[in-house]
Image (cartoon, rainbow, N blue to C red; front, side, top):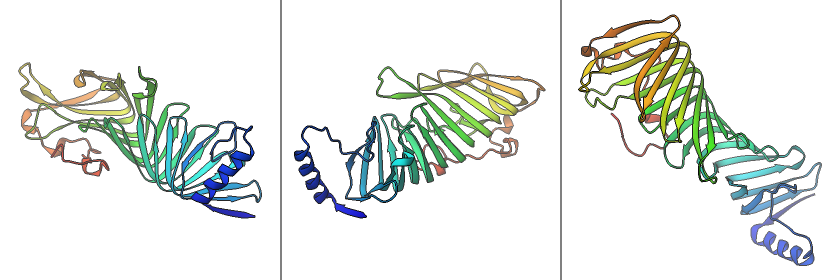
Length: 309
């Protein structure tokens, strides 16, 4: 048997039920489990008692799981499988980030979920933006995974791309929020950074490898980057007067980059090292760019204004 309630009718029914069961605490939830997921709003609620049972909510759906809020056009709960299937205009937010997509699944017993289709996300402080074809959110482990042509922009001037990007969070002083402390990129890892000392021509420091680990200091600035596996680097050199002195290309098994106050300070290459140095006349010459370099700022789904040519 299947029942359909409009929101006003459901509310009236719920109030009558509460009045008849005053000694039993009742919560407006999507799943009748010990760990409650609170339904904040839905235009229509459908229910069924067939099989294991399910309940669907439709239209302007919003429900809460701790600090996490889920919004969508439709959500269907499958109690036996501890999952909620989401569809249409999905928005998943907590106090730190927001992720958007077309469809997804949220597992209520594990506090993790998957979002598919036109996936894009951002830190609420606008420090990081990203997109991919699929995302996995693991709230219990403080992780967000971006899969398939994943790309992110950090502080607008640094671009991170690869097959998979893992963003790891740690608690800040305010336990209600979290900071990024590490970003991992797996397969076809690439890091490009606009050279802030050169505005004409615009040039980019470039680094690539099979795997990349980026350390973030206090959730604010990059402290170091390590690339492993067929690592390559192309970065611009300056003298003590901050005048251009050429461009360095290096390759090796491992490349480590060290930053001071968020600015690249030194680079160390180890294992099967090869390299060359170009004169400053090569600045802006696209022929010396690393093979996989493409500046993709125009793809940023949250880009509101042009920050770089």
